[in-house]
Length: 202
Image (tube, rainbow, N blue to C red; front, side, top):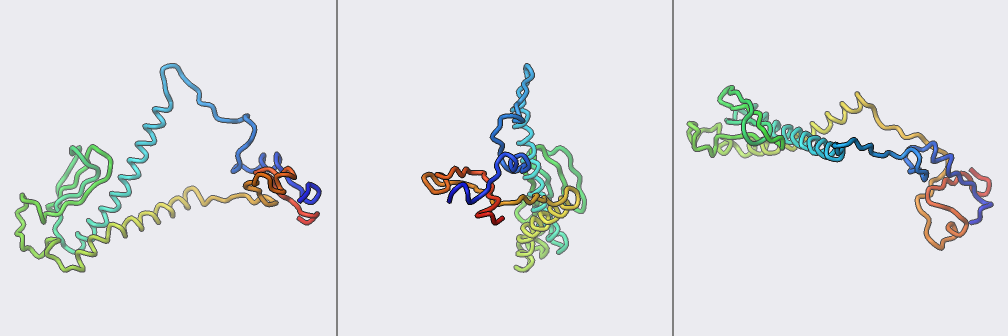
């Protein structure tokens, strides 16, 4: 391959394509420091809180699946908690304790089956362990089903609110890499070049 048989574009393509890195140092983000403040700490804390929030949302959706599957079948429940640790707020309804706790790293559903303080007879047919195997499988698998539904709800909400990503089409073929000592390398082709035509054929 020689330089006469293809046309390539570098700077013009890079200036239009936001998905390719620029070689120039201009426009690079530089962290501005303020005396006494370290923005890295704030960014790290924000990332940790965001991760904890996402984890809690996913687990709450998962546990909600277990809860609803049991509740709709009349299976006894004792607790539904968002987060772990010390209780910040709680209320009781239909013999179920609903609570919000201090450590935002998930949540859980409680069943009275193995609770020694429960006054429900151990042979009660509405205990999870005494129910038909199909009902128990439904309760156990409902968590995964709830997460799948939750994922699609998030994707649908994002598509409605933000929209779907659209990448602008650019002419030519991008050269992602050039092997050393290859014909293209000897002819001066560089990674990131865009081949616009070969032998005057676009």
